Image 1 (cartoon, rainbow, N blue to C red):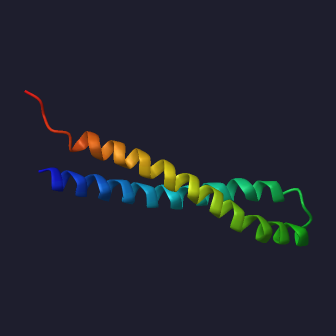
Image 2 (cartoon, helix red, strand yellow; image 1 turned 120 degrees about the horizontal axis):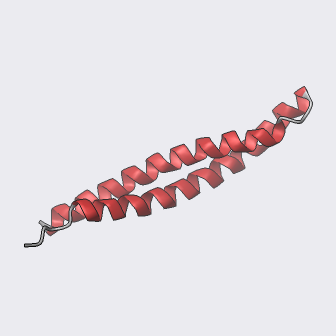
Length: 84
């Protein structure tokens, strides 16, 4: 039973981490794009190209860490042995 519990917790943690990393990257890009909206048309595209890599890195890293920790916590709660 312990071996299955470790596998389930690991799977949930990794799945949650990767999904949260993707979602966090997308949200961060959308938020960073708003900084470029006040620019003129040509500069707006340059600003978007400049901001995108850092936004993806920042959002996906934060999402990955948060999702992995929360996924492991939920996995531990789901696979917890019943008492009594």
